[in-house]
Image (cartoon, rainbow, N blue to C red; front, side):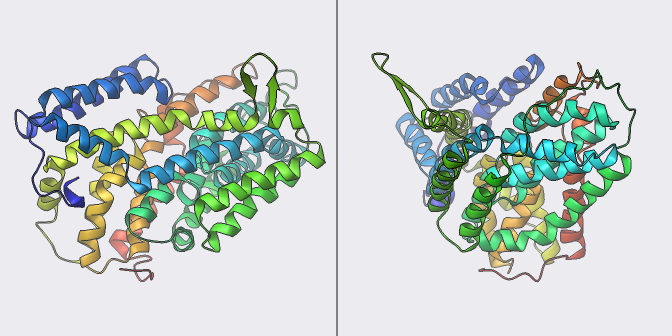
Length: 462
């Protein structure tokens, strides 16, 4: 990439228009897929391959174009995130298989939380799951079908409940040490993950409190008949598994390596679940003689991370070629032409990442694209590494969870279909984003941070 040492821009037929054409192919494909119902990440693979072929066709030096794609994919922070996705998938699958999520839902019902208090409890439960697993997508897919229909029996406002579920999933994405956005934002700014997470608390906790208050205050709705409410099987047996994410969090805050913490977490989950009877040995690994195949929750967890890993690799390669063309560098140079007050520098960080998120439709790729320029430019203006990482991450956790054409809001709307049989309506992606009080809280924190200087005195390496 041009920001990593290549001095001669990668040339395309048609100049800047040719360099942007592959991204246009990708965005057109995304728009078409969104109109068709937006599949999971695997559905985007063919679109990305088509975009890469378009870039190869337009590149004047095809060998260098191919090398640039591979170099972009081979960035250490990209590989670290892929390993984290794979191991987090294993950890998430283990927590699900051992009844951890069902235990959280059972506890909320056992406490007879109704209306707004149930919506508030749903936010807290999803925040705990997303922080434990580091995945907002997984939290929506796991918790949505469990918590949304159960709200019918206790009289909850459907929009507030769905917004609480989406907001709780967003919470973990913005603060979990094993979240992809946390890893990318800290890694591109040269900041340690533990220190970045500690510095981020001052932003996410007020937004989380706002989301909880909104859920409790506005969550009361009509009470459904007892027969219409969907029952959720399970009990509190899985609650001891909460020790596992606490262990991972403690290791990361102690500045241990991310991969080390995740591997210890997987090992601890299995070691705890087997003697408690929450997991059988054959669930850990089972081989059918003569079938040349094996089944395992570990295998299932690794496969869960394949879709987003391949999607990210292909998209990173596509953006790396655009970056190597010099178009991104020229755009950044233009945006920095009006240098001045520190608030202006921080405002440009938020603006650049917002545009990158909308163009790439992928928070992590947007951070990886803009992050190196932010580290070089804003670092010279005295913005600390923690501050830069936090501004990047907070921005990345707003628009994809608010706007209706991003995957998180689409997944949340899809999860609401599980409540139809219980008497709750299926809501739209627009409804899900509008009611996501947590991400709106992050928008408010960004305004206070950039416009009012909140948190500007935090330390961290320059």
